[in-house]
Image (cartoon, rainbow, N blue to C red; front, top):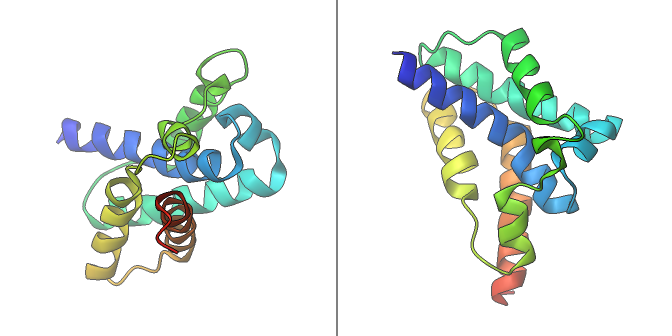
Length: 135
């Protein structure tokens, strides 16, 4: 049970930052410093948190937000860009389907709306398509 909880906690952190970092080419700390991006980050995290709770994972919003703040601090890991960002910059396929797509799929099965996650997923897929010259 603790392993599932830890996996979801890590996943929520990734969901809150990966796509936004990748789409803007910004570090986590900078994403958090821009109010509009921070609001999107929190909304994405809250949607994924709703899905985790529907799966019986006992994470609390406040502890997840505290964790997000810790990993997004300037001067530490918050200065890093997400691996999704690095993949997009290098024209590589990302883990967007695993990070966002899997949560969206579970949400659909449980009839939980995830509009923010779907938009972030779709935008990253668009950049991937551009990088692959599919369009």
